[in-house]
Length: 482
Image 1: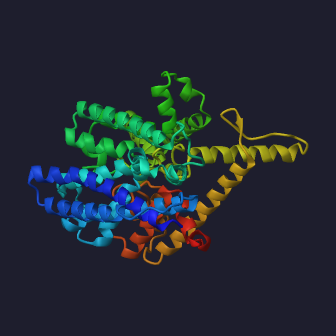
Image 2 (image 1 turned 135 degrees about the vertical axis):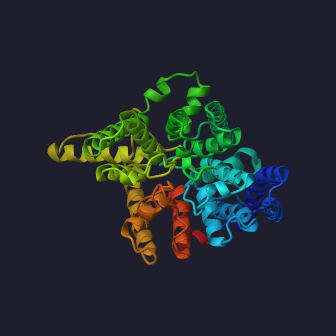
Image 3 (image 1 turned 180 degrees about the vertical axis):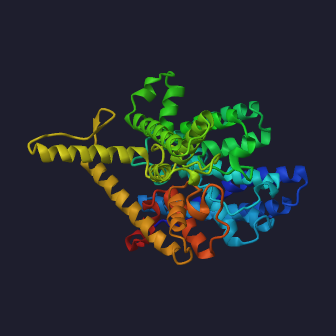
């Protein structure tokens, strides 16, 4: 383990966070709000710590993959630590456990909050909440890769450890350039959404905050009632479109925007076709079930279902309707797509559409082989044969994902007495969604949970964002041996 290089890189990443902390610090100073001192002290602590760590001489050897996993894991955990300082030091969130929970929920784009009166927070604090999600959406360390040439050492390992999906797609020969183009696409969509929301009646501040948390599929809002607080069908439909966009592999967006604006970039992608098929099935079946069992105004129901499906599938977590009042069928559908999540290479959480699609194809192939023992059939994706090693990894990942979920539910159940809440909070945290079921549903928050439960869920958020294995590898003794 190259401890010196890891600490030095953690210092550089902390320095990047300090730079972003300057934005709400200056904003609080301009507004003259009482949270200025909290932001100023947080910036100083982050900047000094980053500078001291960055002064450590780097190791002579290149980073190995295990070093990359350690760097990414500790990078995210430390981001939660430095990100919570403004909440804690400004007394916006007096409890350190709650402040860390809110911070790590932001950086992992989970959107689970312990704040009961969001509109009571100062604007700079609201901006920081949204900014943490925007940074976490594409990845803090991917951003560092894009701007710090030093991180090219072991860059591919770092990239693979942080980017969600079965494989990390390298779009350019140099991993640093890949990180840059991904952030460029991310920024383009963010700016476009800001302009559309601003044109739709949001204040510029609200438009910026909601654009940050939409493109990152984070879900933090500036309103107590989330998006429903704006009471605007236009805003809801715009957010539906951009949540769906954020749930798509950003490599496809890059190819479309910079490789000729060809729609076949999207239409020829099998994972994207499966993703849209799931959306159509969920919206149609849930809407029909609601109309049959509960009735309701047609266009309002369709809009609420479309918004909820897009929000839950992409693991954004915005709310316009209380889905716990829907028929049980609709709630089960939402719980299923909570686990599924968006596409690989997107900012969404969950198991990912591509994994589910390949597992279904693999199951179909195996059933055919039972009927026709001599049949030679392979699983294909994008006109290429999927190696059985990849399929085995996917099945292993789903098994581990399920195992971590079960263990987390058991641990949470020590404090949480309601089974629905225990299951819902773990699924929502591990899939980086935010609102779950039970007492952490779309109209409640996580403030009432015990400290032990909050720390377990905080770890689940990080594990879900880094797709579990990046964190679990740190618990293997061989990781730390020379």
